Length: 186
Image (tube, rainbow, N blue to C red):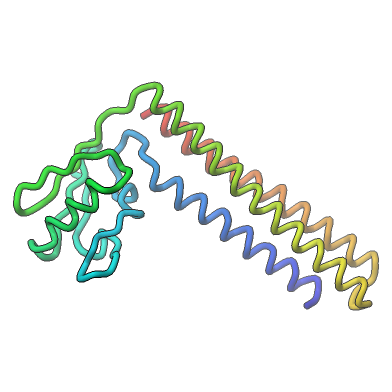
């Protein structure tokens, strides 16, 4: 591999780390009902765990309610069971046709705990990006030892990777700050 390939690989991997964080943050409860809150929820569908969005329509008629309308009425019980068994902390209300989830307002303590969770997830993402940087730097060192590139090319490559890391750390902070503000405003 050459310097351009190292850089592209590093960029792709850091982008994946950022995407993982964004998806994790989407699933966090912010006091406002969103279909994304159920993204991690899996329903036992004919013996295999299936995302709830694949077995029904999810909508939010108002900021504090999520409505799940299964494609088949037979799936109501399985969806309800999955919600009760999840860590969402929501009580499903099954009327025989749809399941309604009421999102209770969050207390100040809950909001602070959630912000701590966001900080922890963002730090995990930063650590992941730093590990990617370390791997990339090792690739540059190995390429220089194998005489595939000069010392100057190696150093320039490492500098570019460091700049890339700073950029992704900034993007991670930006995503975490945005979600933290959303949580605190409710």
